[in-house]
Image (cartoon, rainbow, N blue to C red; front, side):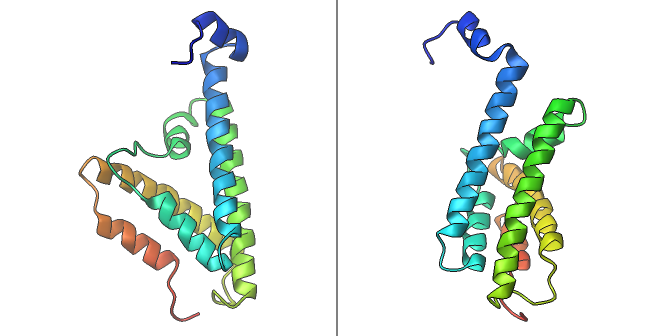
Length: 160
């Protein structure tokens, strides 16, 4: 599909693992940039966070799961390079979400007693779990109600 031979591919990347890591890093960078753009372009921090989370949790038959979640679950315990790349990604995502939650707290969109970094870590863990559930849903085993419940709980609008 790329119109190049195996030798050219390996000459560009070195080997299969280097190619895999480059693809993973690009996927993660593009995903974080999309999250940043979605959050920044929204009318408020909480609205941007909700929009991004809804999109990140979306599923369908064409979705095969999240490359970040799959690499973390399936490879990071066996491959230190993958472990480092995915750990860096989750930390960067936590930072983005913590900064967003801090702005939402300052704007009065979430309770004042919410600790942004703790809440960001909860969101990342919940998102990863929801993406696993979304993958099951795409295979006919998950429930749309479960995904809606997760999102509703994470971004409850009442009792700020």
